[in-house]
Image 1 (cartoon, rainbow, N blue to C red):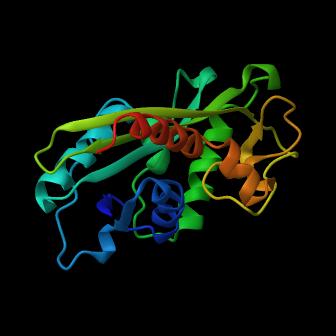
Image 2 (image 1 turned 60 degrees about the vertical axis):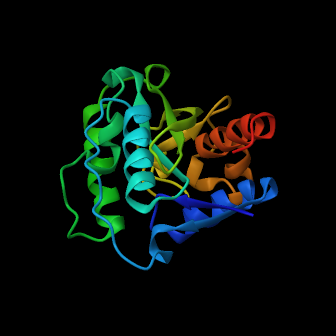
Length: 210
């Protein structure tokens, strides 16, 4: 099997990706399974695609491994695409806080900025860009997936306990009856931005194996 480094220390993300790519004969593993640590590259790109490429190329070169990286976040049309690439730190850099506290602060800022915006103008989408790079830094494939919806309004939100981040605020298109956090994991994987991006990557790799 071909070894593939997933540029993430999140075992749940690595497992999710490995489940899909394993069928292609790719043996996926995460950064936490490497023998030594590596400096995290600075993600200073203006788009999800640029940041995914920065990570994929940097880790591929540093480790000498075939590497897949992703960058994802939320785009809100009424906010000109914000929070975008700043989704994880929209309320500022609070790396010392637990994940749920950072999520709460980000959600509060987002709802505050949308205060007074009517439901029909709260269209939004989760976006995921995946980038695959060879050990020499050559980019092999880059794909994008999107998950359409809108940002809900209090008291409808927050709702659901199956997600994280902005999931409790994100009402899923086309009916806008449930938030992303109310979807069962299997439903979310079938509809999500990362799931769509992975399916596109699988399709390309079937036609052009690495």
